Image (cartoon, rainbow, N blue to C red; front, top):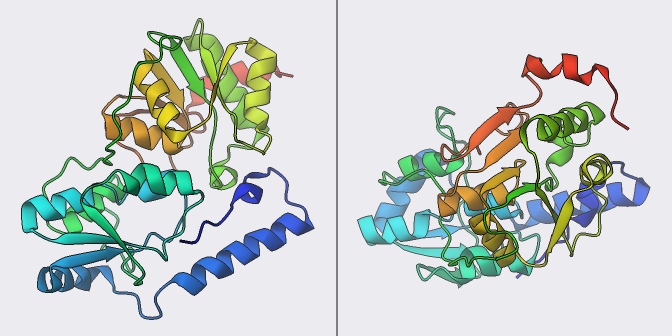
Length: 295
């Protein structure tokens, strides 16, 4: 199964080498896609006829895979349709594959290429999960599905947590912009008295927002080693403050609401109803607060 590293995609500034890595990644993804993808307006007919669906996830992030995660159980329970996960899918890490699909009893892996959303039928759905469920005429809650059972972490129990991590889409979402950093820190200062900052032990990339929070708030930190531990932390906390990330998607899957501090226009298809979304870009009430620079 191809495990494609995306660590260079998270650098705030790309040097020549990292740009080459990004181009290689794009080429590698394109090579794994079917030559003649099935458009979305034909996939339901094919699935009903074949009584099976092969899903090939074209992007490797945790949130990307979770958007498809509710389909296998719904397809089997409501239509008797078996779901296969293509080994040609892209995974940022094996941990994502194991967490999203390894625990799912409703899927089997296959070497065949498969379907991914192609020529979607409009954009009148708040989440991709909801779109997929309607596409296959399924009755669902428009949220992801995880089969991991989280446990309580006593150090986190009843505490507020802040997780400023974000994936490769962070640059497009504006998460590297200093203005966004200032708004994020101002929100924390005005709305949270005390919190635990979540950091990631495995991360090899520097997160400038995380560094700013450490300098300005000097919070206690809790380091996460695995996706399962992230789920445990989210489950244990009293309140959760995150960005558009795998954490926001896991929260939705576990039905534990998080506050997503974000640019709402950047990722419209991941605004799960269970979460609350605070737009730090469009909310003008922060403008006056940004007059004083935060160093």
